[in-house]
Image 1 (cartoon, rainbow, N blue to C red):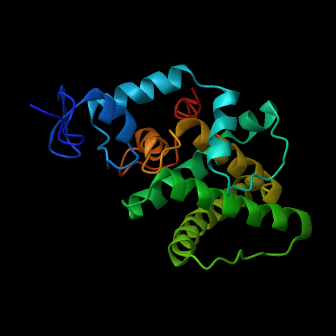
Image 2 (tube, one colour; image 1 turned 45 degrees about the vertical axis):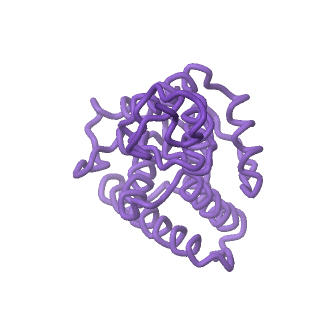
Length: 229
């Protein structure tokens, strides 16, 4: 039997995306490019595990080169910040996951680009106190950014309200939200395969925050959800 895609090479594996058997070469070349690969595909999972094993800064740089349209704010994120604002990062991660669940058609590229746009907004707010609404003629992108911004605003408001209840004042600054968003943007670049139809970053978020689970976790649970490598 020949491959269901190229119709030349011999088929050797079942592809749930085409509901037929294909050759390894087509699988490797068309995976998350022309094929809408389901998250449960064992060959997709193997490819992700292999990519994770080769993780690192160089991969982040490669991904950013593939996402040439991204604007990543140049902000310093010290390791101390990741510990001090771990709950904020978890909360914003939950907001990303919730936003992605609301639109199952989203790909990594959509979510990562929206995070980049939102980070740009907070960069402007942190440096000038002016709320900047980025303009774009892409209506689909506008909708994605608007939905993500809504979820992030809810999470930020809840954090500030919690601070007021517990310590009588809020210490959460727009610059803190900016740093957390840039960290998640970098995490997304590390996690995605960079392919047009990749959902590796989104699936990673779904694993961290299973459906119907809250972003509010106990101190014993905090620190165990966000795994970079």
